Length: 462
Ligand code: F0G
Image (cartoon, rainbow, N blue to C red; front, side, top):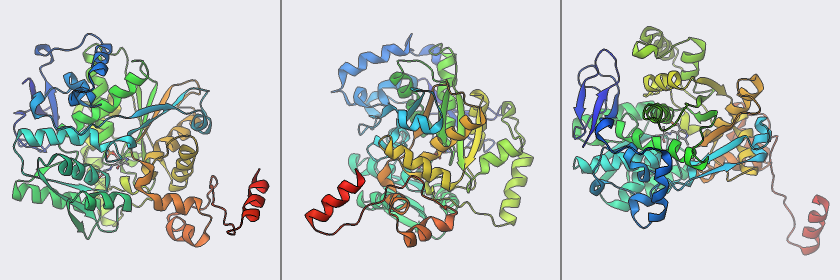
């Protein structure tokens, strides 16, 4: 095995075996990467070599949209890999959404990670974390979640029976589609009387005390799996590199993984350039935006300005400011992968933007009307792309890929409240979050249970 864990801090860089269970560097407390002795590994000469695996779909490892790229995340022996057929996702060119964003025809692509088994991109990472959990013989795994990580961990436990699961969620903080998954997949579910940040703090303590395997994105193995979302985007584009990857930012695991994926591919000579990265915060949960765009905090070769970041969090605590957005998946105050994301933004010449709940829900309606649909947090990517296009940062002729992180059915409440035309429902669910209009609502028409009346309505609507 030629993989190892390595501290990301340039003044530390301690290394650890892949068989150790760590979520931070024992020497300095920084985040860890998985790194490889690439020169000792069989690296393909071109990404095209992975295409031969398409013909071998009866092998679960070649069927998986994560593990068919296993040469690029080679930390596990094939026999240890835990897969449930994740990563059968689609890159769709959407003319309708492209028009909304302001792109030239053919320039906008939507990467539907909601098509994963548990309905979100998290399965890309959870297959990798589950694999590592099996490698180290974990009996119980845990995570804190805004709903998708918990659904994903729960489905890996229920389908594979490799370990038992306990999930921590903020009470009243997660969409019902997601809560129903954890319950139905039989995960022990703790509703912490607090928010996601509280749940994450507690689960980290509990995991430490009880020797439980932690599956949040501080687990560096998870992010190895999430790199493959970018490999599939390239695969769908016939291995051409797009100009922009636009992704919603919550705990910042995905953006971190994408930066790592492209940096490695470039270093291995498998791509000739790196796309630009746009990370989109909800305006009500905009820590990254505040630090990166407003205060100029940068990775700076790993020497980033911790003073500014610490002062920001101190003020946040003093003012008792709490993240608040309808995009509950990304309602996060203290993104744990902040440093890695800053690194990715440097690697990918990145930008950060914030979008309001109004912009998110309007973009979501456009994605639904022009594609397979998505949950609110995912639509932040489309709203963000539109903003960057309006600013001229994205050119109309660019090729842009928006990552749609979660399935539309995860959060039907927000969708129905937007479309229903029911003012009371709208005010209760959306109005109090500052959403004023449902410009793209497709409201149901109430009609009497009578053939002629139905025909009359259809005639009126044309
Ligand atoms: N989109 C969706 C649908 C998510 O569920 C999440 C994160 C994100 C975007 C943000 O991704 O954390 O990598 O920046 N959900 C986590 C969870 C926090 O617990 O399910 P990120």
